[in-house]
Image (cartoon, rainbow, N blue to C red; front, side, top):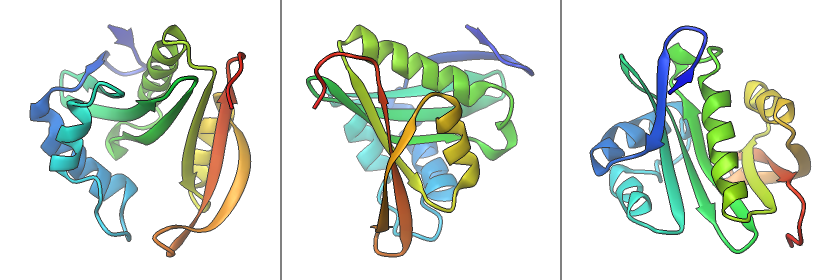
Length: 160
């Protein structure tokens, strides 16, 4: 159990039953203005994939946040990460990100990579605060509609 500023939060791996809610959060909080790609069936496939962790943060009020991390030999990719808009700025996102990073380190991961929309200043500030560095700006990264920023965080080792 992780204590945030306003509630008891439990971070755990997602269940298949979470696919619908995670997909809807992705559509509303991440993919707005873009084609919806992280649909419930895709989320369900990710939950069933042994190279991917789909982690959720739950509060007594329900699903508060989720993160989807793909693992390779020494590099992990945070594919998707969201905190429900009504639950932001309560420490839930930080707790979930730290949980995902701890799992990655335990798995021998040397580097975590992720992307964010270039115009998403709160997300960019969040990742910078957690030790990520911006490594590239990519015009049209999101379906040719939105520009993006690539981030990286190194834990040491021989990541490529």
